[in-house]
Image 1 (cartoon, rainbow, N blue to C red):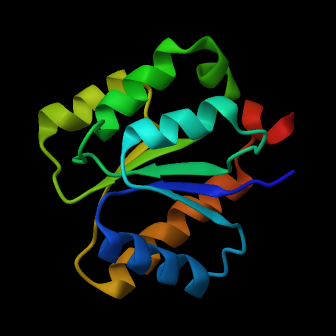
Image 2 (cartoon, helix red, strand yellow):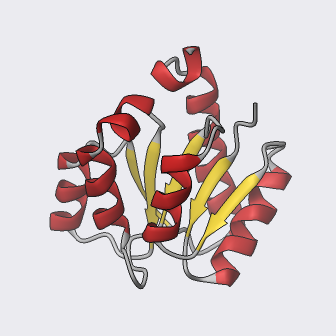
Length: 139
């Protein structure tokens, strides 16, 4: 069974950069890319994969990141999968961060401006979730 990283971002440059960073920090997991929350939601509802982590942008067409997280929380099946979900965005308004955590986000991170900062942030996130035990990791 696969344990991919689910990356949801409508900006192809950001997706490519993040994929490059993940490779540099030694992440061997496959990436599942989606340009909006709706497509990611459809995948999450039908996949037999056990996603390792969801990294989601906020501002996207069709269904934004907060709308996606809200739908996951409403869906018993998806909520009980307990897939770690972190927001990764250029916009960090206090009200948005509060709303993300009210929706049970597991983290909210700023898209760093330098490759090195981005690498440090991703390394931190992946080291944490590799060590952390949660329902999706122990099933």
